[in-house]
Image 1 (cartoon, rainbow, N blue to C red):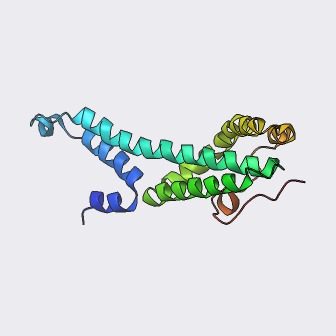
Image 2 (image 1 turned 135 degrees about the vertical axis):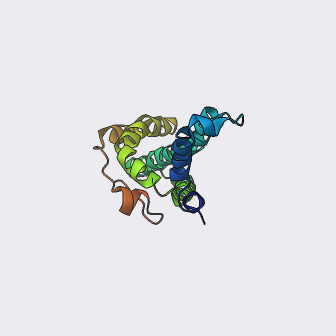
Image 3 (image 1 turned 45 degrees about the vertical axis):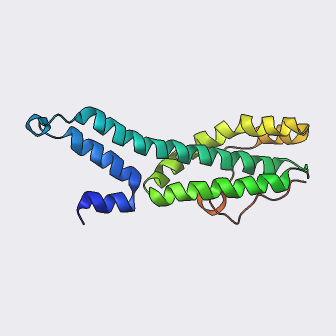
Length: 162
């Protein structure tokens, strides 16, 4: 199996970036058959960026739900939040299984995703009239949960707040 085909199977994001670079590196004489190399490279690159955006969106939603569970003593929505959290975690894991090189990107972007989740989680708690939970969310320190052992762990949930 050629290197490009192997990379496609092992890491889709890395493959898209590699193939876009290879297309752009084609000498002008190899572009004479009418291929729109630059736009093809851009489209292939964008397919990888779509997965990167998907991973970050799912991470943000995982963090929103973890923040709500860590801050809210409200009983009613907890089961629903846990169910949604399971779905977002699984979706994120699927993206990271297809594109393992995105794990490093997710780790690098984790603090920004954590901060972006603040307003969303606080708004959700406000909808339930949970002012104390809202205040607790806004007081949480930066990234108190470990990305690998807690955030991405499908069996871990924050302790119930007192």
